[in-house]
Image 1 (cartoon, rainbow, N blue to C red):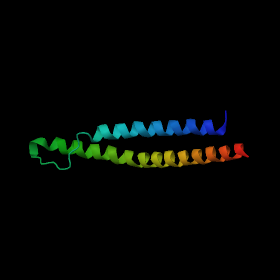
Image 2 (image 1 turned 120 degrees about the vertical axis):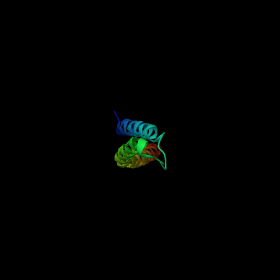
Image 3 (image 1 turned 90 degrees about the vertical axis):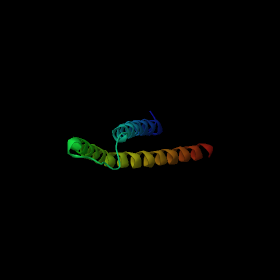
Image 4 (image 1 turned 180 degrees about the vertical axis):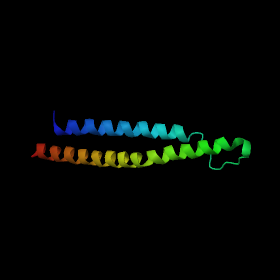
Length: 90
């Protein structure tokens, strides 16, 4: 297997995991409210919002790193493909 194919497989896996995390994060924040106006009877909703934000804040570093890794890897793959294409012409 050529290095370019191996890198494409790694990129596909990274990007797949990134997409799954993005979908999961969007389902978590789908019902998130920017402001809550609660009385004492609905204080459990405030706790749910706090727990939800903790989950989202835990996911954010992984999403950033996977996004950066995916972007960097596709640039490396493009560079290798261009380099191989230029060498085949000569």
